[in-house]
Image (cartoon, rainbow, N blue to C red; front, top):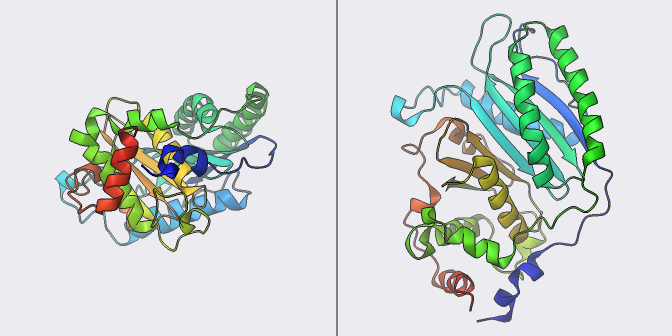
Length: 320
């Protein structure tokens, strides 16, 4: 086996980002009965948050609504409404979000309301530990009020709570990337199928958009690619947030944080999550309301896997 595979995760890990003062921002956009149309943006005062709204809400959800893309899907291939979570990860930034079906003051119900936490200089595990319950609490409060003034008050109080929460941040963030042993355990989970074929199909799909995905010598590790790549992954027995955390850590190690990694999924026991490496397109975000009958799991697609990729991944998983 080649030397780079024996030490792959040492080679793949990027240099740690410069020390960044930790920060959490609460933001919201979308539809709420307190506004007659799209609500005013709350907390969207950074380029990252503005980009999140543009890619996810305007170009993604909005474009699919305008095109009637979800309405055209048969009932068995469509999820009704919105009740989703997402994690968007970059080198030293995480945006954790929730969105749900909502309406504006005129009763129009096509668009959701979105709340999110933009976190800088904080490890993903800590963000999930503290942020998931916070956002659920914020959702419940927003759904319980009808006025714009009440929503603004919720967000003002929420930001104050977050400022206090920062005092509990860990001084020594854990290593964000998976060890080789953790990756082998991920590949051997039952939902990966016999002989880890599901994991190999995931690597094959990633290699399409990021040639040389498995190799630390590939230029893609240093240069932003010209396309994004999408995966639909089984959740298995894990909590969806925990599963998303694992896949983000795995992909980040290989991509060296040259792109953002977005994981998003419907809540309520659905057995999959969607992961997009790179800026998502409107067509990719169609996945938000597509069942497995419309978009199958990547692990179930019978790709013709490149023999060399198959051999390299197989040797690594065997611990050779």
